[in-house]
Length: 470
Image (cartoon, rainbow, N blue to C red):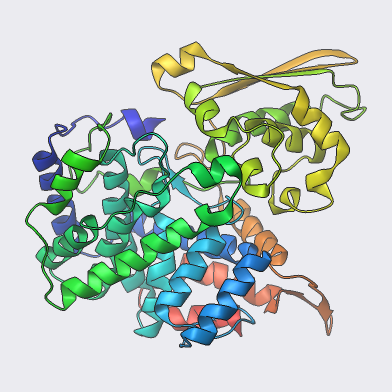
């Protein structure tokens, strides 16, 4: 992955040096509007995250949380056909919904997803403040750069999950930028959040519990709280983040690239074509490539071997998953679902597909083997070998759609957005000959997508949002 290896100059691992880099990044991005490349990528991540959030609303748990928070904290933000919520409530719902199907963005160097909680916090706040699209973008870019760097710096300890940890730091920075704080106020917000980073466990994933889906909502809420606290003049200990890194984080295995106008971690954000943890995508892509060779279907498949880098097996070695979240973290399920259905989208985590007998037979056949070469080199990739009645076929995948080197093109991004929005609400129908997706007119949904991607920076964000929710 070029995001991990391509930067020429690297910063030493020492916490004080890392903190100095972070301060320089804040100063750089607080002083000027986002450049064209950064702005375009921020817009893409906004579209994708909103689409994932709309899809996640199919879950009854998300619907119940949305209704309960709206009843407790009504406000001015609402999702299509949904109740009105406060900024804090909306941030929690958006973050949970966007991560529900595990189809949201991520960043390889950070080993997490800096963008989801940023969108969750910034979108309702920006709409509340009547912000322009460009103001949202500027705040997002700064917050993403901070979040991605913190993810590279603050390695989580064994047994932890990243989502309720360092992502809050990027949210704090982005919200502080939207509030108009000076660089020192933005750094103060980061340090306030650093004083209370959570020790969020991987345990819910291992047991298939949806508590994990609340983690990014926690990061969004903490970041909002920290930014407003800084704006109010509440202060933090000097170097709180460096102290946290030295005493409570794992050892950083990668250094931050030195800041500069041409150094943009946002460039290396990935968008997922499939609804699964990124580690699953390599085997799933290989399975899609091989599926065409199984002309008679999968019934003749007798053996499946997936060779993949060790980290993928550590985090996604779940077998015979009983719950959707276990399946989203399952290499074997992803390979089997792709061979069986030709896609891994939110539908594979719901009946009847989730319990399909042939899917389950294929999943049980998958053998997971560590690719020593990939593991030693610190590279990602997979080789899939499928034995079937006609013989054996094999495919090796080193890069996947959505990577920085192979980004989703505009057509694929728009197709994912409309497909996921359609999945988000039961009972999509035709009204007056106009196809509607969950209360959102499909044409207006495309207008929203096109508007976010193309509209001038001075465009009111609220005008674009109304195209989606009207």
